[in-house]
Image (cartoon, rainbow over all chains, first blue to last red):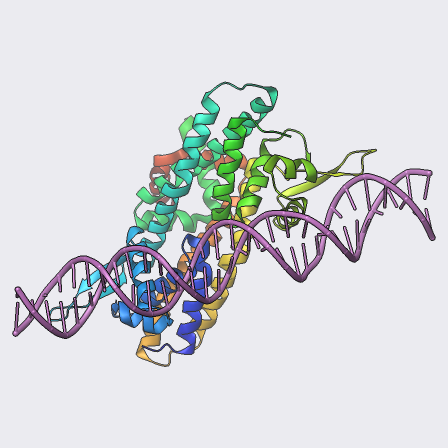
Length: 180
Length: 180
DNA sequence: ATTGATTTTCAAATTATATTGAAACTTTAA
DNA sequence: TTAAAGTTTCAATATAATTTGAAAATCAAT
């Protein structure tokens, strides 16, 4: 398993980006590699292609499974396990978002709610609570909104995004219609 | 400068989250601290509140300035510099998004375009390029869309987000109107 | 220009994170 | 049941990121 220059570049880039998306370099590379491989890959093939240890691959796969980003494939008559991305590019992106929401946004919302609910002990705290309320509202709006978007069919989503700046026109339109 | 338990909790939490948002723990804490402080803080106050070295604060401030997240305030008759968040919570969130787009999405789009444009050298590469095209399209759609949203007035944005589930109704509406 | 207050820099030390590889474990075919 | 093929685990190691603090640089008032 040896990658052409072009493919290697892509995989390395995924490594760099991987850390931004919530996992480490190696795991980013693994996702990149799996995504551009038409055939499912065995752990050994992954280790060879990325020049990392077998144990590292095993841990990476485990992590990716916890994110639901890979699926295991069994080939009849072959004892090895093969791995593939779990869904389309869109599915994968969605899963990453969803998982990050669970790991990052939700705990933050909980902390903010807990902090805001109990009365301020000082002017300092009162101001802090106002700010926390702002953050809370922002996070909640964004969360709800993204949940709504996920509920739309891909076609509806396409339509909506293609509306682009004319979204504002539609909003105005809606206002007028509702007033009647 | 000593924080109450509640405020300290919040600041520590910002530290945990900080790394998810593109900077390190200390810098996350600094943002948290500045956001809940009504008054601008001096570097020494920050160092004391977070129990970190003066040098660390200096580097953190520099980093936050490169993200445009803090502004410097000069108090007449005082030689120290004081720091405050650069805008509302909403402004800050926007700046983080914008900056991450520049640092992460844009370079990825460039790499993908470069890879896709030159002809595939093998079947392997052909498949990889199809996948890269998918990623490219997704990133581009999301980027354009978020640029559109940023162009809307805060009120329009509010309206749009509050539409919630009725977004799909608006889309349907638009379809019908266009057909006429 | 000098001084003292303040900020910045950066090499060294510390801390945190990722990786290896050998041993333990699991699985399956004979 | 055994043994070979495969996978996982985790202590030790290697690598990377963060933090400190003392020295250098900057700044502003005299």
